[in-house]
Image (cartoon, rainbow, N blue to C red; front, side, top):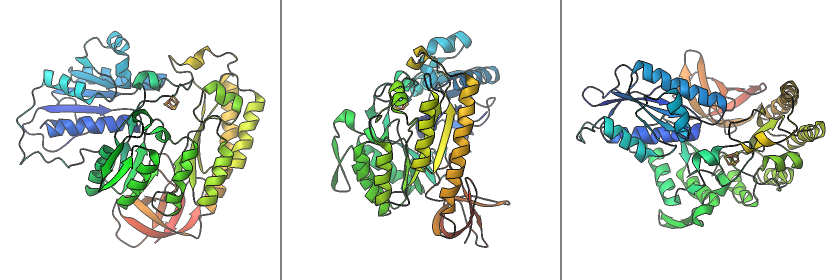
Length: 445
Ligand code: SF4
């Protein structure tokens, strides 16, 4: 059971929790777990000891749906009392068809509905302020020293391969004051790196007309630039994910150059051929990505850019693919993921003509990754000999594993540190980079 547990579980009603899906779903799980603990429930690690089990599901692609349905089945077989939430919760009929015995089904980021369902099955105990040891920032599923900061829910775009807007609805931004207070609490509780996430971080605030809020005596708009300025005051690492290359992104690059934000942008470009971007209905498709990247790097030469791409999208020709390869050679991106297109149930792209055969898509993916491996390796070589501050993730018998500004947790590389110092997870330490391979670095203190 990939679950979360705590040690204060002697007398309280016990809830098992299974968390599946992306970082945004993980943030949902953290909220629900926080609320459970705030109300005095114990979160336990085994199905058998739990009075009921909450399964936070993912419904993004077919494989994730299958994994979620299997997790629900396992929880039912082992425990019998199961509440389902998360993205797959939008497909209640599908869940009921496979598992008619689930007690309740709620959709994504509906914490209140999950709690109502829990209350209906398992009354909360009286709150005891002396024994309920909840950190002010809540229970975190990530290690103590980094945390995802979700700034909005949903998405206003209509990318043809994606069903997230159907699952999660339109963009709903959290007011900036609320986000900043959460960030402050996290930092107070030991977080050293904040990972800003949303479906489209650049669109933050557009739905609430960039409504202003006061924080530490200053007025901030609910806008990406203001958010970055304010987070830059917290003296921790701040890393931006899911940014689209709109013109206003240039406003945050000087903050990166000044050391207020990590010089890192995660920009899911998905393709470079205008024809493909149009078929994909991508946001910022009309923006000149190459031009933007050049401008940003002129201001902040250390800027690390991560991106993901899809090859073999319906209608992709050899010329489109050649354009994509030329783009990645020119753009010299640092961290890149590439997927062969796979259809998602309910996505508009399924109706497009001229599907690319799976073997050809796979061949293109292989070529793409081969080209990119050389680029990534050359980009990392530039760091050899430099002194960098890294953040220690783990210290084990096998050594110290840390990350630099260029490495987001779980998706990028790591820095393996040789040292005689006693380091601990969550510590910043100065190292000298001694070696680089395709994805990782080696360093000494
Ligand atoms: S931007 Fe596109 S891919 Fe991302 S969530 Fe919105 S619709 Fe989906």
